[in-house]
Image (cartoon, rainbow over all chains, first blue to last red; front, side, top):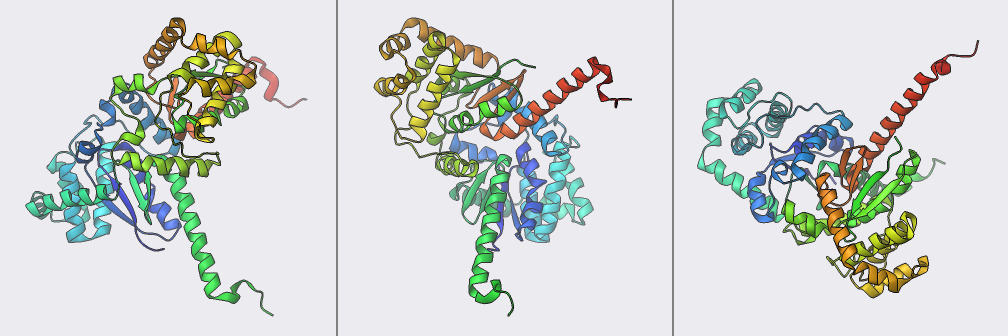
Amino acid sequence: MTAAIDFYFDFSSPYGYFASTRIDELAQKYGRFVAWHPILLGVVFKTTGSSPLPQIPLKGEYCWRDFERTARFHGIEYKRPAHFPLPTTHAARAMLWLQNHHGADTATAFARSVYHALFVDDINIAEPAEIAKLAEPLGVDVLAMDAGATSYQIKDQLKAEIEVAMAKGVFGSPFVIIDGEPFWGFDRFNQIEDHLKRGRQTELRAVTSVDGNKEKKPA
Amino acid sequence: MTAAIDFYFDFSSPYGYFASTRIDELAQKYGRFVAWHPILLGVVFKTTGSSPLPQIPLKGEYCWRDFERTARFHGIEYKRPAHFPLPTTHAARAMLWLQNHHGADTATAFARSVYHALFVDDINIAEPAEIAKLAEPLGVDVLAMDAGATSYQIKDQLKAEIEVAMAKGVFGSPFVIIDGEPFWGFDRFNQIEDHLKRGRQTELRAVTSVDGNKEKKPA
């Protein structure tokens, strides 16, 4: 039970941002690692027929209120962004390039910066120049990143990554898959924790039965 | 702070059913009363452009899994219904007639029976005969109820009730409004409780400041 927890998100998703502030801490508590997967909801919505939340009649007005209340309820920093909704293609491609060339840790640190920039500092992360500014402190060659993020190779990779995600049933953000069990929404973090807890209990029982005398007191 | 909590639901909504098993208990804990409002998601979806969850690609397969897992997580009885989605117009109209002619308590008891019939006993609640069977044990004249539920007066009332709900921002099921604050989804019950708790604290502080010496120790 040490396979990565898959965490899918779109950089423009407020609930994805909320999840990003908690997912690693939660996974570590149960000895698990998180694989971060940027996706594009715009592509997914072509299949599901959905629209960005704030553009849906009635739901739109509600969701702005819910973003703020949910952030407050969970003690997460949040400021309503002025640039919204906005294209997140460049940010997602830059993240894939970072995963390929600098590894998961740098890419995840970058993803946190992008989310913080959009949902706390109100920065227009659709701008490649802003994305470069966020990558620079991580010791990244931002010209190489920019060239990589706009290459056909990375464009094709992002398309394929989203196809894989949808084939696994991903249709929203945040979306978490743990050992084949799918969870949609930041609301499901309590069920995710419950799932991880049960998984660990099963694992502990298995270890005990292999090393059979563990539960007996020494004579 | 004793105004009713407004609880909107469609009889075919599994999350509405889950909410129906908890809403009164939660309200009573904070000295509040619940006004139950049956609505028709089919009418609401004409405005929001949504579809019943199980009919949406990708989301559809997920939601059946989530219904079961969520019921288990919260310890709520649930069995996947064979008749689904199904029209809930007759059930909603019968409930309005019961509210008009037998009062809120009988109508709410009826609503609980309808939800239990669909989501535990797998009964086709689209059938007026099944609805009559559920109302009979409540001492209701089922012939009068059936006539009432199919009358123009009740048809018009349900339409108008749904218009009122949408004017207040309701777009899903369950939907709860407390003192103007809207909450969508059974997932929001923790935020609802938080809201009720804060409301009561405000009220208690107000009482204390009127009766100024309450916090001082006796001399």
